[in-house]
Image (cartoon, rainbow, N blue to C red; front, side):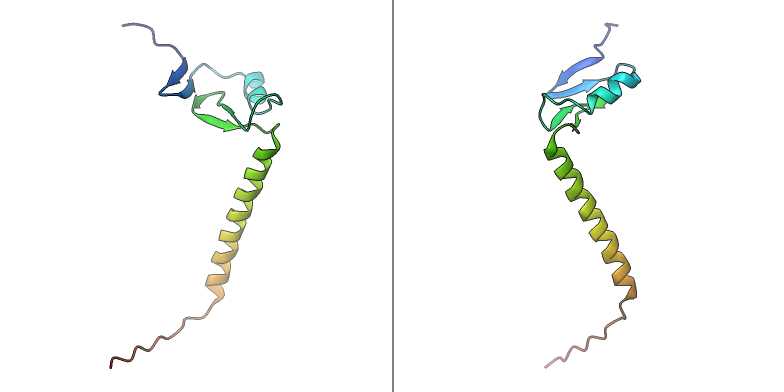
Length: 89
């Protein structure tokens, strides 16, 4: 059986299954000279580059959406049930 490469791309999506080191994990999320998305240090696909300001906007929007959803769950539990009367004519 032939040895399969542990890094590369498949249909344009990067993959990396090499054993990750601490240095590689930390440096993968902070690349000032690259765009918002960078290759994952381990696994398949892309991750956010925290050195790019757009990544922080994405994280802030995602956090706001999660906060709003959880706040809505608390408010819906406090509301009283509403009786609806349907008049068939």
